[in-house]
Every structure is written in C-alpha cells, then in structure tokens.
Image 1: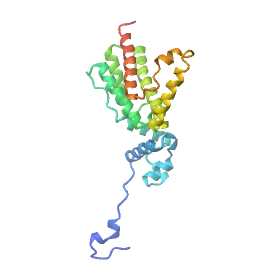
Image 2 (image 1 turned 180 degrees about the vertical axis):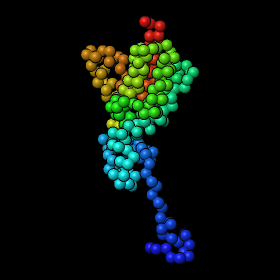
Image 3 (image 1 turned 135 degrees about the vertical axis):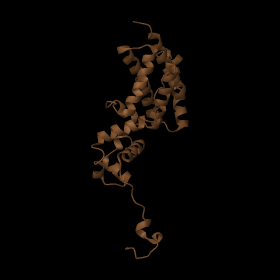
Length: 232
C-alpha cells in the first residue's frame, strides 16, 4: 500500500515491516555453527544454511566460495571458544586446564572431532591455540621431534576420548538403561573370569564417570611426557 501524504510514520505498513539484515560472512558462519550443532556435518548443505538464514542459496556464494570453505570457517569460529594457554603458567597446570576446556568445547560442538582430522588447521584461532600449546610443551623442555610427539600424544588423547564419549552419549540417552547395561557387562565378565582374568578383576564397566576418567587418563599421559624430560 502506498503511503499517503501526512500519514504518521507509525501507521505506515512499509515502515513497520522489519527489514531483513544484510548477509555477512560472520552471520553466515555463525548460522553454520548452529546448523552443525543441530544436524552434524552430514546435515550441512548450502541450501539448508540458506533456509536457516532466510536467504537465497546463491547469495551465500558472494561470501563463501564453497561448502568446504564454510566448514573451515565454522571450525575456526568454534575453536575461538577455547582460551589459549597463558604464557608463564606452569606447564602441567596450563595444559590440564587447556585440554579440559578443549573437551568441553568438543562436547558442546560434537562435529569438531569429525572435522579436525580432515583438514589442516590453519585458521587464525586454530593457529593461535596450537602455538600456545606448543609453547607450553617447549617450556617444559621439549624441542624438535620430541616436542611434536608430545603435542601429538596430548591431542590424540583428547580427541580420542571425546570422540568415544560423544558417540556413547549420543547412543545411551537413558540413564537407567545405561546403568543396567553396565551391570550386565560386569556380570558377564565375572562369569567368564577364567577366560578374561584381568578384565574380570580390573575392568570397571559400571563406572560411568567420564569426568574422572578423562582427568585420570590425562594425568597418565602427562606423567609419561614428564618422564621423558632429560632423556636423549
């Protein structure tokens, strides 16, 4: 409807209609992170993302060249939630805090573990955090191949633990059902103690405390790294 002369602005349909904000790379990437959280990597397409933004699919390509570029940008944006290791902090305490936070970020965005191994992490947020971790391990006394191996061991532990944790939690959504399965597993091992004596004696299938398990495992990895210090 055309606006009549002297109509108050508040009665103008044209003025009252909210304007759709222009697209930007930042807005597109934020929407991509939300879509990944909801649908996972397999559920992401430029068409679905455009629908989420109430935009035309082709308009996204003015800001992002391809889906792969979009995934790179979304991954680096999610890694920005992770604080870099602070310089000057004791190396074990710094790495424990940083890697524990890494676990929580990867729990919040389960798709991170699916993407990390499929592309070089060269975004500014990824590089800043990698630099800080390498600096902490270097500060402990590692150089060269030993430094790379120590960082790789820490990274592999965290990613492997969280991948398993995410998959388990995605499947076992019923606490009562999970508890029953764990008790039955314990009984199954006890009944076969002659075949699997170490598992029957030491395995703890009834233990569902991922937090304690992560901390204990990380301590073992850090102990191993610390034991290497001073060796040729």
